[in-house]
Image 1 (spheres, rainbow, N blue to C red):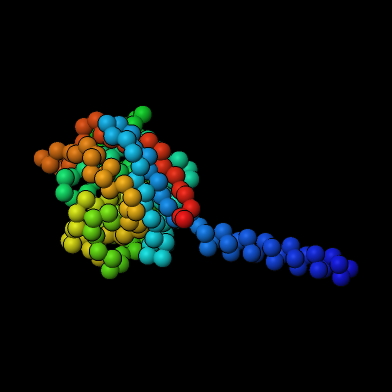
Image 2: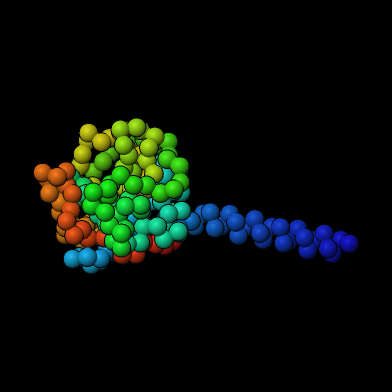
Length: 194
C-alpha cells in the first residue's frame, strides 16, 4: 500500500515538473519563411507577458497551419507590411477585392495596449476602428510610428530578418499599400528560443 502511494506521488511530481518545464520553455519564437519574388526567413520573438491573449491567438493559428500561404496584402514603404488575412489572403484563393477584410473563425480579441513603442521591427495586431476587433491580421514596422503607440496591441518584435523584410514587394500608395502579385508567408511555425 505504501509502495503504491509512494509511486503515485512520484508520478504526480514528475507530471507537474514536466508541465512547469513545458511552460517555462514555451515556444515564443515565430518563424516566417517567405515565398513569391523573395525568399528568406523572418524570426519574431513573441511577448506573452505584454499581450498574452494575442500571443496565444497567433500560436493557435500557427499550429493550425492557418498562416501558411497567406500574402502580405498591404505593404507601405517606410511604414509597415501587413499580412494574416487567413480568410481572403491565401495564395490559392487570393481575392484582391476582399483581402484585408477577413479574419479567422475565432472570436475577436480585446485590446492589450501597452506603453511599448512602435519602432522598426515591432509586430502589432491589425484591427478595425473598434479597439477590440483584432483577430488574425498583423503588421511588422519598417520604421517608428508614434501615432500607433497605445492604439494597437504589440505582441512581438523581429529578432532577425529585417533585411529580408525590407526587400518584400511594396504596394501602391494610391491604393493604401495594396500589392499586386504579393509575396507571401510560405511556411509559419514556432521554435523554442535558445
